[in-house]
Image 1 (cartoon, rainbow, N blue to C red):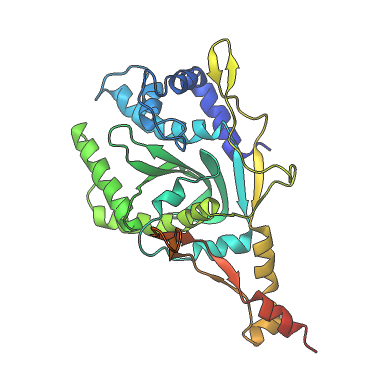
Image 2: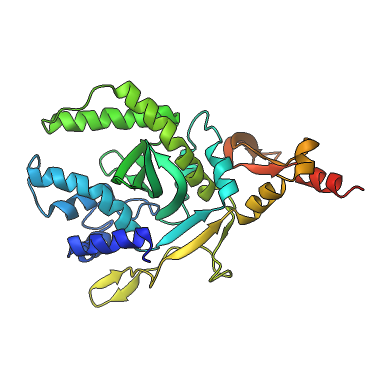
Length: 327
């Protein structure tokens, strides 16, 4: 059975025959014929819109369709060059999705995705009542104002649904509000009506996107627990371009690479469900993700105070092991 993200990739390749040739052209023009963009962005959304539109006029029906297609092309097209599929341990996924994300979103952390675009499987989750099989996540660099955006493409039973966060020094609620305002502005410029009830829309999206963002943040943490059972000695790495007669090109891998995420942590949490531990209130738990302030630099020189995002960590396991081993 074909993996879902790979099936979507194959369908995209059939629908847009010249897409990969055009991707090479835009990538080769980076910093020369086109403005430069950060290394954490594979290809800006403006390029994907141009690829999807193939020269259509602004405001035309073709351009409107291209804008819609671009969100799908950007996620699936970027994922093509790494094809990482991330399978979270069930217990870790549950703990992460239950972790509240209070305060400002750690933007710098999100710029450290292990790949340009990841696909995360979510076999037990829903999106607004529809089954959510998984989602793509990648970071976009807005060419016009250099604004970073965290973009999701949700793989649901009702189809592919884009979701955008304007990330910066603000909360998740504000990130979605900023995107909603921008979407409303762009719709008005195109002569379209934007649905009312923005406040309710923002509230619903904030609650729905928070569990997915928690999983992405874990992948971006300092030492995420990732393991490829087929190649345990090889970690995550971005592909390198190869010189060809037509210039430098990136080539996709032969097949997707499946990563087990948080298996060891999940095992600890499962063992923590031991009846004796529960009865004695010694069950290890996951300390929720939080901000941590720290100083860096020489003690006798200039020092800098910074905030660092700490992912959830298991605590209480040592005490638990000692207690249950006591006769």
